[in-house]
Amino acid sequence: MAAATTSTSSKIARYVFKAARGRGGWYGPHMAAASRAIAERIPLVDLILEVRDATIPLSSECEQLRNYPPSSSSSSSTKRIIVLNKVDLASRANTKDWINYFNRRNYISYGVNAHNKNNVKEFLNFLQARVRELKKTDHSSHATTIMLLGIPNVGKSALANSLHQIGRISAVEKGKLKHAIVSPYPGETKDINSLKIGSHPNIYLLDTPGILPPQILDVDVYAKLALTGVIRYCMVGEKELARYVLSVINLSDEYEKWGKLSTYEDERSSLDLIAESSSGPALEIKQKKQYPTDHTQDFIVNDVRRTLFHLISCSVGHLEREEDMVELIEAQFAGLRIAFRVTVEGDHARDKVAAKLLNLYRTGRLGHYTLDRVPTHYVL
Ligand SMILES: Nc1nc2c(ncn2[C@@H]2O[C@H](COP(=O)(O)OP(=O)(O)O)[C@@H](O)[C@H]2O)c(=O)[nH]1
Ligand SMILES: [Mg+2]
Image 1 (spheres, rainbow, N blue to C red):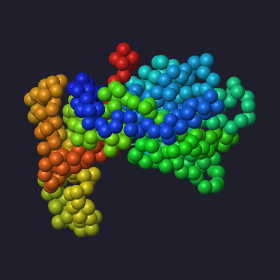
Image 2: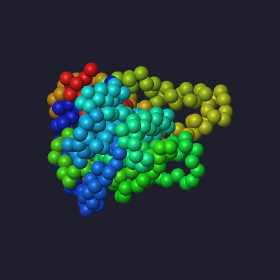
Image 3: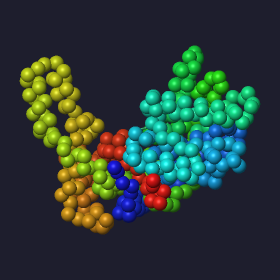
Image 4: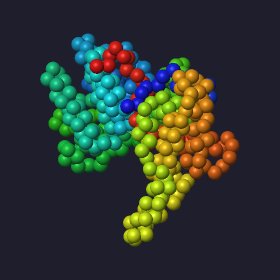
């Protein structure tokens, strides 16, 4: 499975950091106020779910909770659970390692995909079991309050909506469902919102705005946060970020799977054959495939994968050396321009290739990657 980033990626990450416009531009009065409001609520809630991005379980840590005691610590009056969201985008093996790592350090952790109903259902059962356990020691009849907390764009609102929806449906409760704003852009949740996720006992979930420290000086962390959309794309150079993505792909083994893909010509001719021998659906498939500007179509994604596979396999350089990595990345930009059917020239072409590549990476179409490495002595 995909490896974490290594030193050559760190070198490429430097360019992301250098190209960033306004290194702390995300931090304004609104985030400072949200941070204070959250800090005031922490002692009042029964459970804290610290949501992190499963592809960067360490870099997406919420600094405000850094010195907060582990869940099983007897000194903690409020309990904290580390939720690794977006497991669908991460390396499955690495997510397991990370959960083991947190558990061994006395943090309860849970991997989830906020878009997967069954997954969220299991997570809700897990939360309800935790609440019942809490109620055993605290005999109050108060409703339980759980707070979602974390940096921007890790999926807090998506998770809140899914838990709310499933919680209300399974309790057969009528009434209008609430809806927290979910967006690919960070900073869309502006206030603390309460959503009911369980009845008998009543459980309320507080969705909160994402918070980040005013500055991030670690070059690797910065690049990873930019790549996962925690920092707004417009604050970061997309070309530099695309180069970083390519370094990640080049150093992992995900690309090896793409060697067996059939060529675009093979796909076209088999479609032609089907279309000749039948009508209706096959023709529709063929017609559907005639939008070369839409880079998310399967035939373009496959061309992209094949191009990357071919160039990585043919590379004779040592990818631990920055010059060799940069040379491969340059060749990949040229190859991807053709794969993405980009017809414009020059710098504009690079911008387009970068944007399309980043989009495919972020939606998991180029494999599953966990960019943070578990400290080796903790891997079981
Ligand atoms: N692939 C994937 N995307 C997710 C998941 N959860 C949320 N997202 C996406 O991540 C982006 C940020 O989600 P949002 O809930 O607004 O994040 P928040 O800022 O933490 O509240 C949106 O584009 C969501 O659709 C998940 O489990 N898997
Ligand atoms: Mg939100």
